[in-house]
Image (cartoon, rainbow, N blue to C red; front, side):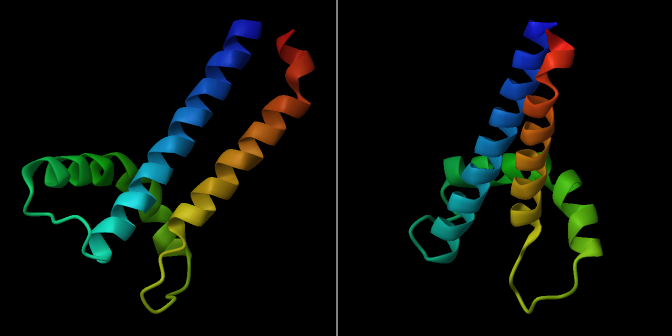
Length: 95
């Protein structure tokens, strides 16, 4: 059962880093550092959007309009952190 705990923690870590990559890439695109006309940037951006839009979509619908400010990644970060806390506090179940 310890391995199940470690796998769950690994999946949460991977999800966290995917969201971080999406946020950083969106900043770089919006500030003009990267260009979506570059094929590799467009492919990475499209892949991250396809991966995260099913997660962001329901959150964006539930959140009020913030005038161009997207708080969905912040909500996902908080949810991932909350799941980590729950798993760590209940680690005894996995031992």
